[in-house]
Amino acid sequence: MQKNRRKRQGDLKRKELKPKTENQFDYIRTIAESDVTLCCGPPGTGKTAVAVGIACEHLLSDKVKKIIITRPVIESGRGLGFLPGTFDEKIHPYLVPVLEEMNRRLNEHRTKDYRSKGLIEVCPLEYMRGRNFHNSFMILDEAQNCTMEQLKMFMTRIGFNSKAVINGDIDQTDLPPHLRGALQECINKLDGVEQVGIVKLTEKDIIRNKIISKILRALGN
View 1 (tube, rainbow, N blue to C red):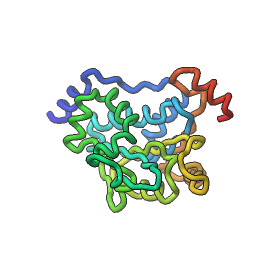
View 2 (cartoon, rainbow, N blue to C red):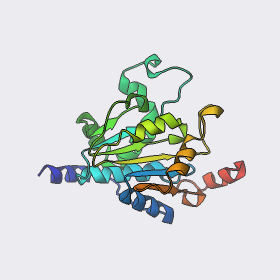
View 3 (cartoon, rainbow, N blue to C red):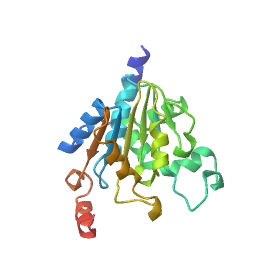
């Protein structure tokens, strides 16, 4: 009864996930077949959209009990405690792109309701240490801004019956030069590991305004 009610409520004005390119189809297939999926690609290729879409489908069908969303918080040498407002107000700006996509997949009312019930948890990467997430769909967005230590920490939080998707654009990082490259290094080292999937999206997968592809080519990315 509860499962069916969740499906009905989630279906109200929500947009279902459909792959728009061959590589996006491969991305979806890889997530389905793997415990951990690492995906890299330029802006507009659906890295976040696909991960969020599948996470919502898993939640609505009771394949997982909750969704965990995180992003590295990049600030000018200060932690979240220095930012004004409540915890949610501090972290909200960093998660806006993910939450907007979630509103499309569930609708805004369902997203707020699921967050209030703990079915969707926004957890800053810096606050995940020491926790384990069972029966969860975990999303690490903008992972190009993670250090190797942060990536290791995130992946070791994966509990039983859980999936994790790590995505980012290796050509766009806000880290200082000496800390960059962890996502690419992680992809290289984990390629071929059982139950770890690697997906690379390209300019051909950009589904936003076509001007993005032209800009990226002109800038040499």
